[in-house]
Image 1 (cartoon, rainbow, N blue to C red):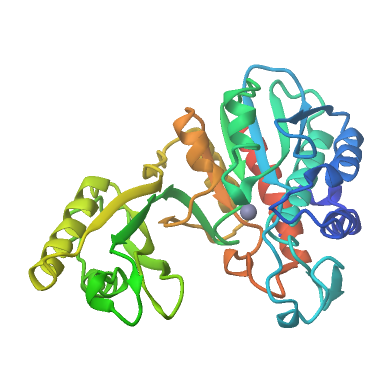
Image 2: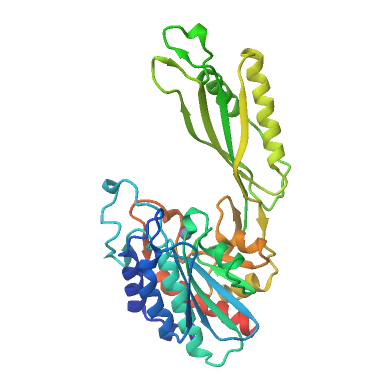
Length: 388
Ligand SMILES: [Zn+2]
């Protein structure tokens, strides 16, 4: 790979930042992102950035570094919280003791999203070294609370703290050769079956809530939302995620509850989903006329599609081509902060200096060479964005 930015990239420094951050347990909940404040601040200050702190709740620190003050602006948005390590016995190395083996760093958050932060930092460093007098503003953001919905993170920064930039790079989704430009909407549906409680020895005095729920879920298995949706999306998905019901074996259960996760492309609405579920409920009621269901939405986001002709996606693509890095553009069913920013009027590039299949799994790792490549790619993107 040939780039004038390469000479400014310090591989050992990237590794040191990743290892420092991964050694700090910022599992969310509870978060404790304040633990990362010192390492992140030191990195930002080495770039002569102005550093600001924002906390919606104590300990849930967002750190924002700013370089330059020109009108044209861009933000790098990474996050400092991580998902729980899960079953520790599935890890070959301790999740919060970063371990380097064969050019990879293992540990929770090595990729998602502490490696990404180190990569964004290193890109800013290389760009600022080449362009000391650039006319613009770069924000380097180490946000809180991404894994639990960003209410204390980017949403707070943009909606309550007045943080604003024109476009963003979000190293938190996709792959080295894949950028995400659209995300499906999320619809979480809560289904409740209502029965009548009674002693388990006299079931005829009660009404079992579990049995109709089991029937309904068997019907929902074949629920079909059709193919009339925006062709930039690959389809819709449905996952029955939880089921609960009853209180003891010798009691007729009064309630049973299930939750379902739908991911919806543009063109399929919440009302479409509810109508299909109501049809399935009607089928169950034909067999069990006294069954009773409630249905409600627990959480919903809208699908979004970024304009592939936007200046940030064009700049990113030009940078990838300049480096001869193959790059594909897709939509997906995950939700990143790109969605929050999109609805705040900010277009983003979503891209990982790694592979998002490694996020959230045991033995998460990042390839050090890819963090170096990612740094060069983002530095080239900054140049293409600011200098055309
Ligand atoms: Zn992430």
